[in-house]
Image 1 (tube, rainbow, N blue to C red):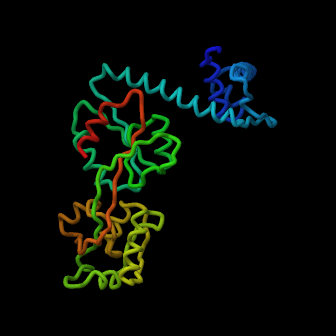
Image 2 (cartoon, rainbow, N blue to C red):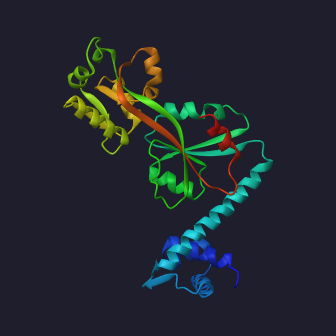
Image 3 (cartoon, rainbow, N blue to C red):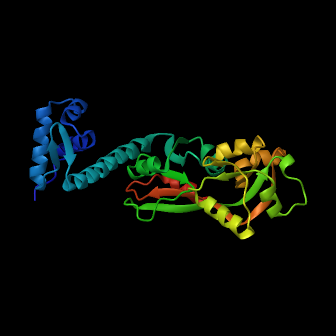
Length: 290
């Protein structure tokens, strides 16, 4: 069997992502005919058509989609190799961390604090949606994803999920909304509430609690961003259902009060990694502290 020509594979990868020969040729700085020739050579070597041509557009066949996924993994591994070996002689080492955009900033700071203080480490932080971050992790562009939404168990990429922390969930608000001596049920019906959105796992537990207590809540806001929930609680919009770590500073200063801990409710925080041939050695130190 002939060895795979990685030059042909690189041309194919660009066309696969551009979906157009002209754009691919511009990106590769070669002629369109040169790109077509390289694609034909690769198709001949693999024994499969990789594209279905419809006018000027190039659509991947099933074999083409498989080849594209392998090409992405191959070239990502190459970039990882170069980055790993180049930084071996550097004084500062990079750790690339992605965090869900809605995740508590306080949790991120607490978790990363020890490594942020190391003079030999440069931490590169990136926020985004779960889809964006897990895609970047699978492509080896980042080392770790911090999230409260672990990837689905049927994900194609072999993600490794590390449970980092589990925080109890409280009912938190400004002192004016937290008079002493009331039962939990009275608090839940007596003040407007700031709740996580229905898409979150935490909200499912909150709704189950309402059902057990036969409570119909007065909802002031439904929020998927812990930073915004923190601001609404500080503004006195309502009692917020969230982990105390989100408003740690406000609780310490007394501007907010945790008036009740909600029974059997907690928020889990995860660190997600992926199997790598050249694992970032900083990850072991960071995950060991959990």
